[in-house]
Image 1: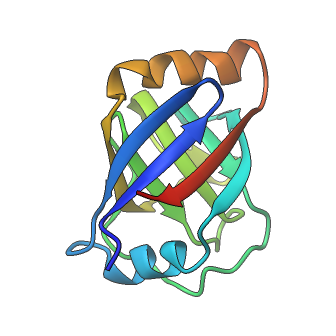
Image 2 (image 1 turned 90 degrees about the vertical axis):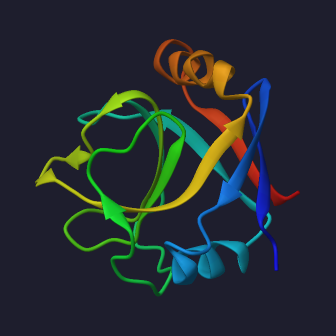
Length: 138
């Protein structure tokens, strides 16, 4: 079983552990789609975070280990419903929300290597625009 992911985003590389005990279905759904690539853009409503908008992409999971208040590096998967499917990557204070109001996403991944560069990545999405992001098994 894969326990760790490598995240390459913009100019930075991060290591992260899957939250296998707390969100096993979400972890399995995400891992089954590796390598996972997208464009990371700055959020509009949630505070200091970036997100990967995924439209109506269906991970076939419901709420699991969900939170609206992720800490820096606590990556969320919002499986859709009130708003579009997305992956949220917080780099500072975050209250996960959208145009329809507060949301709760599945905390399935925690960045624990390179965390000191997460703010630089978030600020790059804010000031320079979308950054490429790729998740692979470590």
